[in-house]
Length: 252
Ligand SMILES: Nc1ncnc2c1ncn2[C@@H]1O[C@H](COP(=O)(O)OP(=O)(O)OP(=O)(O)O)[C@@H](O)[C@H]1O
Image (cartoon, rainbow, N blue to C red; front, side, top):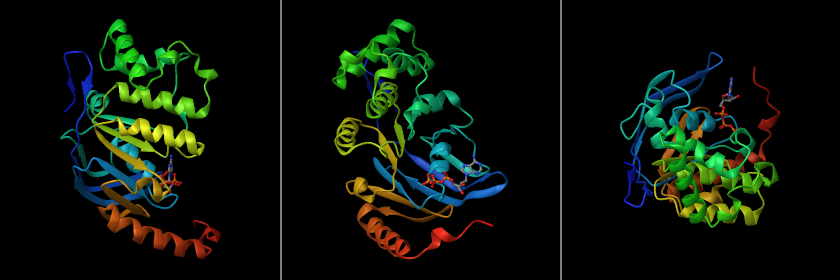
């Protein structure tokens, strides 16, 4: 549950994710099927090959789309049906920050989500200023977004979702395309986050210190367990697949 403290700052805590027999169709074709899991882990990695359904699962978890079958609850809420709960419970970061940023300046962008959560403009700007301070980026306040690099835009998106203090933060490959130092700096910023983090990535090295891994394979949950159990099996299978030539196969 998110709690607002006396100084106006918010505190987040770990989330309870409960998924039962979840299935989802896109263009009349099942892209997720028979997914059931329950977890209260704080750091969850999602792996799987291209097209295995990772982004679709992320969007379902964030309540951006409703499942075709089964149920999905975050801290007891059906987020696709309850947009107010979704704004409070979940934040999502996508791969391309340009798809996420809508305002011309940094302070407007960070304040927007807070206003969506019901804050008045001065209160939202004060909370946005606190977030900028926490990240050591107070100097960015009035900067135009167009002057930021891709990594800086991604950090802005991270600050904007962090300001909303969601209990579940979903990262859908936000670090692909960033250089190594920028990745490291964003990674450090994430360690400040106290809620549940779910990160989609193709790079198992990013998940070594995570608690649990979900491995999706052709829309099904192939494995769910501790990182030390799942990652070695996943890496071995991906290495084997890399030695084959299944990229040559076209879908019917
Ligand atoms: N808008 C859409 N309409 C129809 N099919 C879609 C749509 N978006 C995705 N798909 C299909 O759904 C399946 C799962 O896609 P999804 O993007 O969830 O996989 P992914 O694991 O995130 O892939 P990647 O690693 O390439 O990002 C794929 O077969 C994809 O082609």
